Structure formats: C-alpha cells, structure tokens
Length: 296
Image 1 (tube, rainbow, N blue to C red):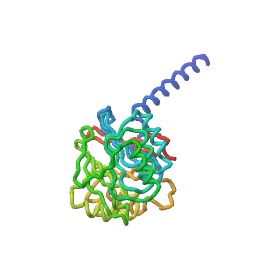
Image 2 (cartoon, helix red, strand yellow):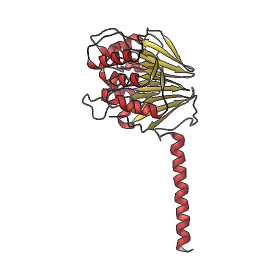
Image 3 (cartoon, rainbow, N blue to C red):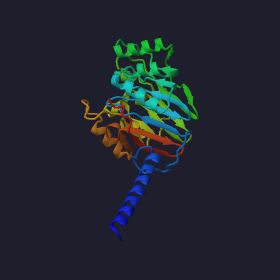
C-alpha cells in the first residue's frame, strides 16, 4: 500500500474517532461522574445544578420551563451566575430562596434580583445589618419584588415536583439555624437541601419523614452538621457537598466524610467535581459534571 493511501486511511480513522468523542460529550452534557442507570433525558426531566461557587452555596432547579434557585453564592459570584443562567436561556425564576442571611448564601442575590423576573422570593424573617443583606433589600425594593417568609409545612409546586418547607428558624444568635430547609419530591425521587442547618435543626426535623435519595449536606460538610442519627434517618444514596478548594475552615470535616462513606453514601463535591448536575425522570437519578466558569 502506498504511503499516501495509508495517510488517508489514518486521517479517516481520526475523523471518525473525533466524531464519536464529540457525540459522547454532546449527549452526556459533560463528563460522567459515575455509571448511569439511564442516559435518557428531555426537557421534562428534573435537573438540579449544584453550582461551583467555591466556599458558598447556589443550587438551580429546572423542570420543564420552570426554574427555582436556592441561594446565590458570595458577592463575587453574582455576575458569574447571572451570565451562566442567561446563557442557558433562563429569564425568570418561579421561586428564589435565600436560605439564610450569610454572605456565602445571599452575596450574589442582588444580582439575581436585578437581572431576572422573580415570581416568589423567600428568606427567613431575620433582619441583619450587613451590607450584603441591605443590598438584597435594596434590589428587592428597586425591582418591586415582595420579600416573604415561608412557614413550616408550606408546599410549592414546580411543574410536577413539590417543594416542601421542613424548617425555617428565627434565632438571630445563630443564623445557620435560621436556614430554610427544603425537600423536593419528583415522582419516585426526593432531594433534601439543608442550607447551613446544624445538628440542632437536624434533631428538630427528624421527627418527620426526611428520607431522601440525595442530600445537600449542611454547612459545607462541617462537623456541626450531619450527625450519625440524622444521616441514618435520611438514608440517602447520594450526598452533595458545596465547598471551596483549600478553604480555611477545613471543610468538609474528615469525620463527616468517613460517616458518609461508612453509610455507603456516594459523595460528590464541588471542590473536586466542579458544578454537579443531576438529571432525573422521576425514577432514575443521573449525575454529570459541567464546566460553568462560575467559580470566581
């Protein structure tokens, strides 16, 4: 065989391999973090994005053409979140929750309020005097968005999913324990979002049915949350920890990681995996990671 023919064949093989690789990336919307039970997805599936915002929290939920947001990262994350959400076609949030008034949860919230239509905005009824909190109030006032506080037991609908309020606190002495705790149920799957709630809140909500397939671990995996009894009561298959690389708090705690591992819970971390995306048809739960460039 002539050298020119060998080169043509080799180039053809390279082109075919490149097309196969590109097709894989397109259909998986990122890099697989594990084995899928089901790779099918469509616009009616539930999607949950645990945004990579460093040592902070921001979670975006999509079902059909409806969106909800839980927290908005640090102050430096606001514009980055806005740019990313707009890039994937979001113009409006049906629900926005600021779980509590710490900067690493509501720092970017004023940017969200100023750039998206918001039907319902919720935070605990706990006033602080920080500039971050005042920026949120100023943005709400400027955009004529009403500040409301949910009640324990309230239920909201997002498409076919239900968002249940399990807890909202009022103790200003520990803002972590004012966190709005939410559980989302979609068909046969369930998701628990703990904000920065500590063991005090965990004990309170453990009186109810808190079992969930996925838990967003409280307070970035600190030792003051995720007690053994609580984790066993939730009995999750997966745990997601929103945490920054090499953070000064040494989050997540080695104790918590061991506790989750000992309970056979698969752990995903934004400091290791980047932005983590869940897709679910209400039966299967699929994890992928995507590049969002939101970690400022």
